[in-house]
Length: 492
Image (cartoon, rainbow, N blue to C red; front, side, top):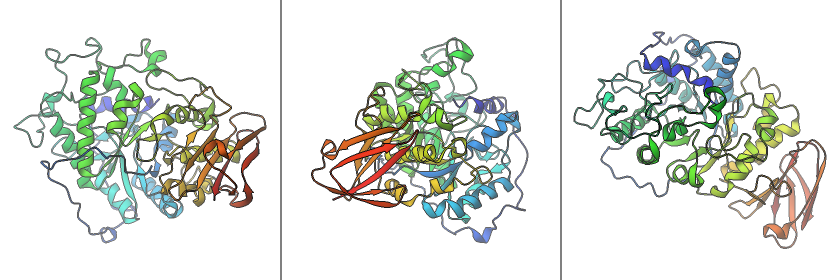
């Protein structure tokens, strides 16, 4: 779970802000390097059509997650965590040189490091640790990259008296929970760590719209919003061990949650911003999340990564509510029922290749993300990636992402191990992709008659990891070593 991130929000609630300012020395960019293009911001009153929001491909990007996790592992308190200009320069330069040529176009913040409102007159986050967001955007832009931001329009960063745009003197304080008028799931359970916008209050729609306008004006086009389950019903299965009953807050109810997602969707669509929904319960087959969000998390947090998070943790189990799956593979299998081209994107969370043991394991985690239609979110850093860059740079595999390919398992049952480790789908040009995975610790043989996936006759077969043509076939017979995979392109 993303619980190591939450202490920093206590600081926001009690009004503790860092005063460290940005310095221009050593930032790696100068003003003349920044493209002179103004951001066009649409009018608030413009009508917005949200009937066709699933037009994005899954993102390819780098995240600060591992950098922050290592600080946490070293015992650094969250209010002291920071990624300074020098570290940002190293990350941006590394991404620009090694990942950008392969389609990765963004770096993204995450939790852990204090998220501050220092200068913004409307109470929105403008500073991440010691770095102003406008400076991070400029540093990325100078290298032809974008900045994504971890933030949530349902979190209040500013003071109570802060005005809300496009309202008649409504303030942030009026968006908070009112015990006399608001009906919540757990009225005697205070919200842990967060001060929330109650979406049914007057001014909530305008505040949420101002949030996305703020980021659009900064040049941010990707928002990763977290802890949605806590907002919906105040319950988190993963916290039962820590807090006994799993209660983490009041829980504002399904109606309020849907209203919040609707406002988020309208405003994000208005400003052309991609929304990543994190820690949702995904009730009723993700009914609300796939209606209003571009991408949804389908697995527990990466944490220490490795094969356990990819495949073994609570294998074969699906839970009611967040987190529904504890490993990526089960999450992708189970939620394949709601994914596809022009549908919601499944998010398998961050990849830390340096935590895997073998090349076979590393090929498997990259392959499943791309075959299932998910993002490839690099968390390895310039000084931890080792010789693993080649797994992120496989252009034949990354072609699936560019094509917006989304495959399916032969079975969506997480216990059907005979079929759920065989994935297939069709690219926009008619070629088929077949992925065969061995999640176990012994060698296995897989056989697939191509007629089972709708292919009649022989096809040309190409291995996308070996970059090698393998002749023609109407049936596949593949031997896979432990924790290995094979990804094939089949062409008529």
